Length: 153
Image 1 (cartoon, one colour):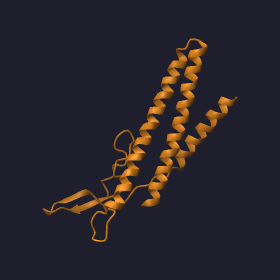
Image 2 (cartoon, helix red, strand yellow):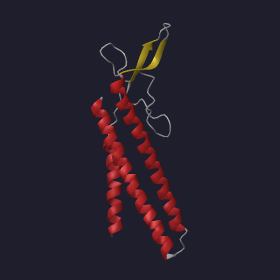
Image 3 (cartoon, rainbow, N blue to C red):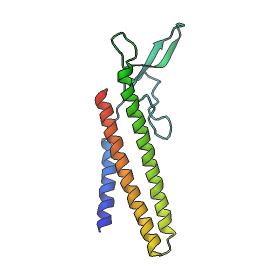
Image 4 (cartoon, one colour):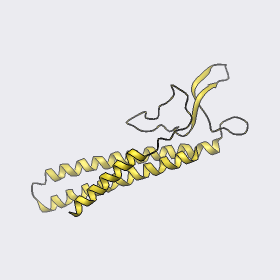
């Protein structure tokens, strides 16, 4: 009964996080949105402004990083570095979540192949429980990073 409650709370938390997580993003020009480039991962410039910019040779880059801007109208590095850092942290947390899901699958495989051995059964059970805790922590951490990223925009 205790396990059922733990799994129910974990499942409810994951459902709430996926439905309530704000979809935050900086100002992006049409056609430049690459917020989920690879395996659902955000791009490193997720919290930076992206849009058209005229280059030195009068060519226009339609998807250049344009902001945050400083007083002179250029890129403000002091504001951009924390935003890039948040995006990198979010990427790493999502990778941690994927690794945790892989450990759930691995624990399930160990559970199925334990063949009734009590020690193998307990080891598999601990692997699955620890992996589910890891999934819950990484999902909550990604949500917190997204909320912080949305607050600094």
